[in-house]
Image (cartoon, rainbow, N blue to C red; front, side):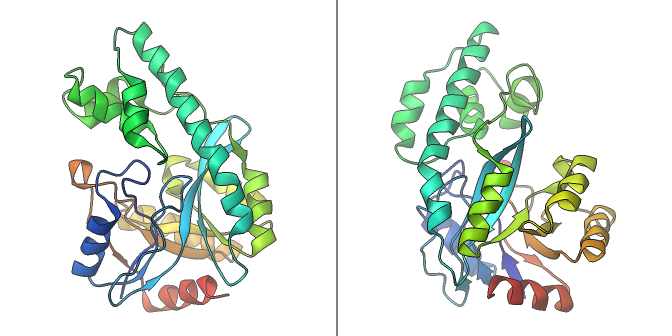
Length: 267
C-alpha cells in the first residue's frame, strides 16, 4: 500500500494546484493521503478517490535559532490550536522573504517581491518562490543553481525563520491531540537525533524515516532510532512539483510499519 504524508501544492511553495497533486496521488494508487503545505491547511480538505485523507500541515518552527520542520496531522481531537497559529506563521514567512530579498539585492540580484506576494495571495511563501523568480528573471539557470549559489541553508542569503518555537508547536499539538513527525530528518543530521531524543515524550512521536530520496542506509538510520525511542515511522515524497522532482508521489512502507502509522494517525 502506498501512503503520502508529505507533499505540497500552490497553497504554499509547490508548483501544482491541489487538484493536480490529488490527480497524481490517484494515479499512483495512494491509499492514505495528507497535503502538508507549509503553515497552511487551505487545500487539505480534499477528496482523493480510493484514499483516506488526513488534514495536515508542515509547521515551520524555531529551535534556538535553527529552522525545524514538523509535520502535523489532525486526529480525533480536532486541529484548532494548530490552525490558530497558521496566519501568524504565513506573515512571518513573508517577512523572512523580504529580508532575503534585501540580501539578494546586495549581491546584485534584484527581484520584484511585491509582485510575488500579490501572486501568492494567502498562500505561504518560501525559498522555492525566490528560486523560481530568479530562474524567471534569468539570474539563475535552474532552481538548483539558485539554491547552490544563494539560497542554501545558513548561506549568505538564508534567514532563520524565527516563528513558532518547537516547544510551542508541540504544546499546540498536545492541546488537540495532533500527531507530530519530524520532517526530512537527514537535513538536521545529528541535531535531528538530538531533537527526537529530547522531544519524543513531549509530542514529537514520529520521524519521517521513509522519505522519498532515502537510500536503504539512510532509511535504516532513522528506523533504528525510531525503534530505540518508540517512535512511529512516517513516509512521504516531499513533492513540490515536476520542476524539481526527486521521486514520485507515494511511498511504500513494510506492512508492520504501515499498520503502526495507520493506528497512530487514527488515535
